[in-house]
Image 1: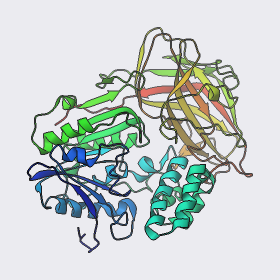
Image 2: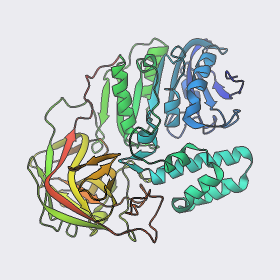
Image 3: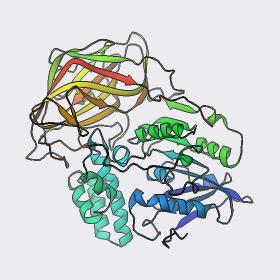
Image 4: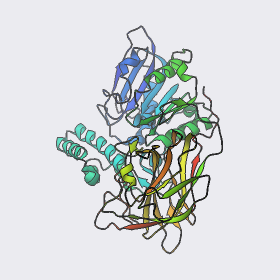
Length: 528
């Protein structure tokens, strides 16, 4: 197809065998149209066999499409042009839906023409805020994830340009893990105009500097199936899309599973097919669509509707000063105030690893007993539960921290302990990067001076804990390589530890410290 500026984009089409015309399912992606996101979705031929004309397009500057790849900035105009074209291709009946995850999730949300939008759409694991949903969390860049994704795009750029040596250099770096050290240099050589390189050189704070895409309200109000994962870094973006769709007058479906970015444990194709059959083929809503919002328990793997609004639980933190050296000394007190203090020393020579969770290259649940036994990880553990406990929401930690360096990181993990104490199973994690203002007792975070406690958001979760199990909060000064190691001098962290990195002592004041569970969804639940 020809875009409005004459640049031609290439698509691959899969036609049903039955007589048409048919509704169109469109995916626009930068990884090669033949792959068609089959890492997470059924092959397009499966959807074609159910009566859809499937179109998978190489976006501008990728695959066989012409032009220069400029990332998300190009997709609003090209997306509108593509939707107008796809409604009119041979075999189309004019009805059109979009699907795709990650980059393909955002392409279906962008249009510079409110009349050139899909009839329905199914964005998965994506968000609208380039800083918060694609590049950073808590004021810290996604280091391993950001570099890995940027280098994948850079390698494909080398392939497109015939630069075999560049492709091989990137591939070797990713395979060996050396990209964690040399990834920025590789991006500078092979994709200096790329989004990942730009993001990693921009401050992750303050707020307001990032690009936040603004889909037209007419699009946000369209029937929408939103897919997220507890172990996916874009989950907050999906939750924000759900809220924005509601605010625009839509009533979207929401499904959040115990999934990482690439592992969906069997996929969502049956659900997605039912969604498109209902809206594009006018079939009655299938059983899969009866509940507007369903959340999968990350422990039991059972699906459930959101809990009714209720008073959210909170915990205080207490230690006599040994919570970092003795993993069993610190206490997590349900419904009580905390007390005491503990000092955690971050040694850049041996930073605490970040494991699993939503920011790890090994994303997902994990066992972390060995991490909690380290002397630079402060642990706070509840008493054995007297009755089962359902955790559903957004954990938020409020805590006073005194650091002896201008900048520090605070990295948290929430875990459940087996009844016999034999295993520590990580549920979710969160990271925060903070900068103290010289000559003050306040802390600068996201561009604002805080004279009171800092706040640290953990990844949302739904998890059922059994009677006799215990809940644990673990705190450390690093999560390498999920985020770069903080040098402590206030400069922008750019990778692993180096000779200029400083030892950072963190004094945790537990009086008034509180771990709260905020509501996951705070709008009325309904669906069209």
